[in-house]
Image (cartoon, rainbow, N blue to C red; front, side, top):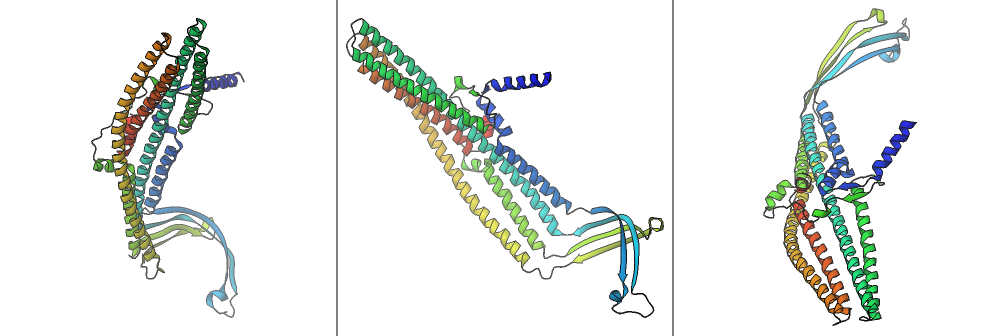
Length: 431
């Protein structure tokens, strides 16, 4: 009982401790326990078992038998007539037998094609797994960047609250000293309350974003998640923009999956055509057989068979037509995927260049807005102007800060989008 209590307390302590995650940690955790990645791994394992089943059809099959049966035969039905002076039936009598039976395909191209198709199925499943891993990384990176944006907005909102509090204190002091008016103090107080409200909303958005990140990572809902990359918020891995579409097409797992599916469909079509060919098989049995276990003697049977399909009711033609339709469908899917990848690559490059320019403009805007706030405060302190200029400057600084955060987020998201378009998400963010 004491050990159980200690274990429960230890588990509670672990859950109570926040989980600090870097972007790399979050990506690697998603690749281990994201539900879609786990399902994709199971899909690969299932396709491997399908190949093992197809391979078993090419190998000899053997089994052991042990049985005892009771027989009673009607001679009249066996011969089609009755024989005077002979009994109508024989038995009942017992038969005991034990031994081994075997069978083996000698020539069956259909089984061989299906085995090769199962091998292509593994390749397609592995490509689907790679696509699932890429998608998981895309979701986690986007959510992590969104959480970092929310954290930055909280910091910016807190900074604006501190500034508004300082300006409210300044207006209050000037009013007490007779250098300010009540309307200035009231105006500063209104601005302070507005900034506090923005801070509450920003914190709620951050919590919501972290909840979504924890769900993507399949983390225990009772455990709190924290971002460990806040000091280096905007330092995401760089990706080359000079990649050609051919390189992107070669790297994306969706096209590898379609190529494997096309190979599988072609083999299925060949397997359907091979159904018209003769099939040769061999089999037999070696048994110990007798009326009782004490009277058994060896018996055996060996056989070879040649099966030639003559009429299959249109089954073979339908199977060929079905495989041909699948090939045409995959060809259309391949063209659509190639066009989509090309659009994603071009769009990501354009957005990355635009976001880079936005970051430069936003950084300058924040610097100018801060200078404006400083000058407005000096003018208000000197009595040259009321605090309307200060409030206006505060609003401009808040807008410039929001623009900077949004621009930096779009820049990092564009870098991630380009990495996804070129099939480099896991390479850049997990290693």
